[in-house]
Length: 287
Image (cartoon, rainbow, N blue to C red; front, side):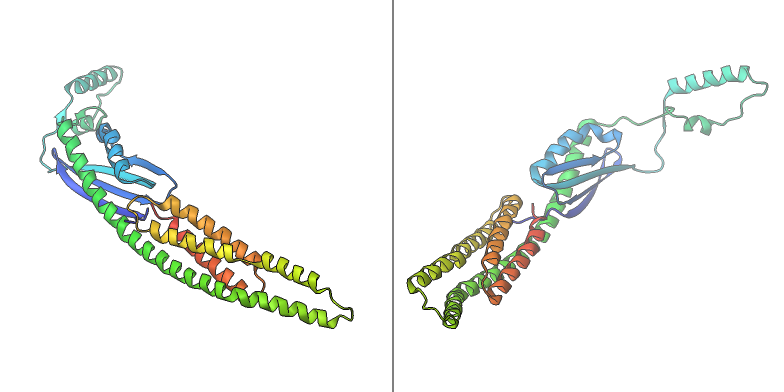
């Protein structure tokens, strides 16, 4: 199924006395570029979570944000007694050098870095919980990618159908273009007083017909369009392949435009190039 590279999803779970929150957001990118915003307390799980995400998402600039909140307000504080003793010893030394006693409360002591300790948690249980949390967020993220991908597929399908119609119009127009050139040359010759060399004239007409013949370009345009429609049905990541096909379509449309010999054929070439550019912008966002 076609997937977009732009999506957002989040999930929340209670694990080991913590409320964990995961947010996954992504935008288009040529490769798979994963970055993390994660507290130091959860940093140990980054490698495993990165592998989990890269296994599911093949392209895009992906940001995984993890945060946590402690459950409950009545949890006991865990004090680092060594840090408290060191702090009190230091204050006594400072107090001896001062004329008046230091004035601070127990709350001031608690606010000092290192006095409070984080409660120990079961890392294995936390890792398993984080994996499930990210898995749930990934599921929502992929669903969002697929929803937008379905819309992109529909838009590209519609434009491909329009392009096929334009190619058929150009193919039907081609004999009239060559006939108009022949008539124009004959009209010019009649204006001349000298007797024309009809053998040479036929040679010139053949040369012009070969020069202005765009049947090969039209064949390639149709082949590329059929390949795009077939690619849109594949389950793999197809963004790069579609991007290459957009380049090939644009090359053929440019050649068609340069060989154009009348207004209608020029208009067809312009319409094709407009549609290709619209599809190219949409393809840039496909995984």
